[in-house]
Image (cartoon, rainbow, N blue to C red; front, side, top):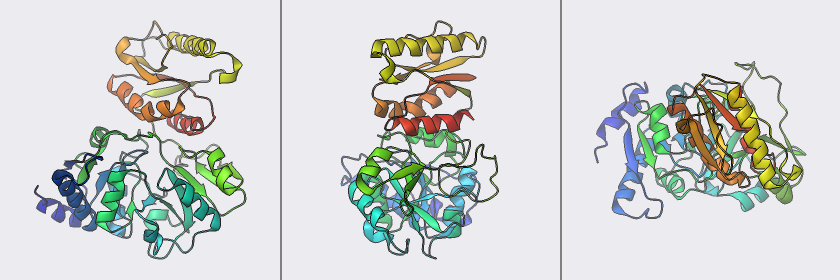
Length: 376
């Protein structure tokens, strides 16, 4: 495997005309020679100041050495990400927190014991070693330990904490496969480490554990109910409404910007009855009726639909513009397939995408958050 050219590009920092390496790793066989070679190559790129898209259990992230200001700035250049939007730092061990954070509050310790490795990001007081560009100049840095064997092994081999927002163009649909990464960033990053589809499909929960009650800035796979059971009262962040396209100041956390996760198509969201309102058959029929009515109101628009299993496709929508989303009563399945479905309907040429809003319980809160930001 040739690695010389990326060393020169990593120092240039222009993110233009890069030959993006596609490295493949089987998560079940990290000790295989080809996997080890790929991981060593990716780790060397990170140490040299380059950019590597890496798999996590949530989505694919675009990684750089979190303590290297120039490397982190290349993330912002590659994504066209504004400087007011902070990014999350990923670690492979609790020992990596030394030098990153000043101290860890007791509530945060309890949450780490229960949910790390896993999809929970904690906002903690940063040390001066963390570049301002990571936190958008804010005093707190978001830190998490991913629950993906390839991500953990890559960070361990690199020997540095890895700053990694989602590996897509800013504001676009987050990537859950290496192919999604390449659709957005091929030629702009040094490498993508391909370990198959992400298992969770939506980004981590972001929590400030210091105040009482604690504050969730971005709902995710670790739910408010789970957090409160471990560490006490929690509430959702209530930001300015509506948020402006360009905030007056840096955002307090990753994931609270206005238009994120968005397809090229116009996304139309449809509220549906609470699942308790009737039996499952009646509920699915109600979803179908709303989708059918919405499809009739968008004639000639190349309309597509995110269609739950068990719901008949609207007659007005062509079969190639129907994405079978998954079982409505299994929100984890809907979460895993959400971003892939939006990307598939974009690729099918849809100008409008109809999507029912799942109920807010559990990970449904994260689904509703992502869909509402994508539809603004």
